[in-house]
Amino acid sequence: MRKRGWNRTEEQGSSLWKDAFLRLSRNRAAMFSLLALALIAAMVITLFCACTADDPAWDAATPDETPPETAAPANPNEERMYDRLELMRHEELVDEQSVMICPAVADDEYGYLSTLIAIRVRSRIRSYDYAVSTAFRIKCNSNGVLSMLISFYDIETGELIDEMPITYDLVLGREIQIQDCFEEGDGAWRSVLSARVQSAAEGQHMTLLSDILPIEDGRPFYLTGAGITVMYRPYEITTGLDPWPELSIQLSDLKRWLKDGGAADRLLNTEDTETEVPWDEYGADTEEMNGDLSA
Image (cartoon, rainbow, N blue to C red):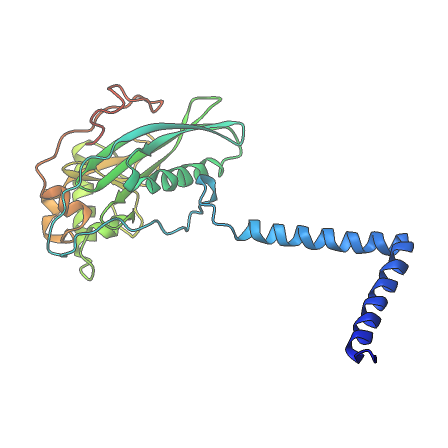
């Protein structure tokens, strides 16, 4: 009986592959090259999968990272009451020479603040070419506002070399600047606040180098339970007798210009106006760790 043609074709194909494999197996160099190519391909695939994996580690965040938004009231006119955040003391060795001590947030909903705080402090530490240590004071922890002052010291001499205030608005889910506390479109607050600051400086018998200019965007500040404190660097507005001027103004004196529903406005309209809870200069609280750490 005559065999069907496709069987012969299949046998020829099979024979060709078999012959090619036999020839390849006799050539050790060719076999080694083939195995090497297969290994390289496997490594490339593995590396690609690893690079595309989502790994939101603590140190993976960048300073420009946008934090997750906090849960805002469904009705914009509805006020949400924020409990005090539960804070912890975070200590970390930076670049094997500097000691970073800063606050961390224990609340899961606002845990991202711990990452943002550490990024800000760590970045400032790395701007120095010598070993430094940090300490902090919580200035406000009330009604959705977390405000703090980070101090930087030369480890070798113990000298205070820098101060950095940071304020977060939990309603916005981000760090705020001084201009965020006031109504947009009305720049009158800049001159009003600078005039109040100058009066406060004169009241403390500071020797001013000149009249204080209107407050500019990004001017260092922090919030307390009832006030706003404007900060200046050494010799910026005074002589060396007042190296780190911090001038506090009551929020009630600025009520007309405060942004409606903003961080400062919420503090002004809350009954929680307790004074700052002291932390020692090394960043350790003088009260219980889970106690009241807000201003």
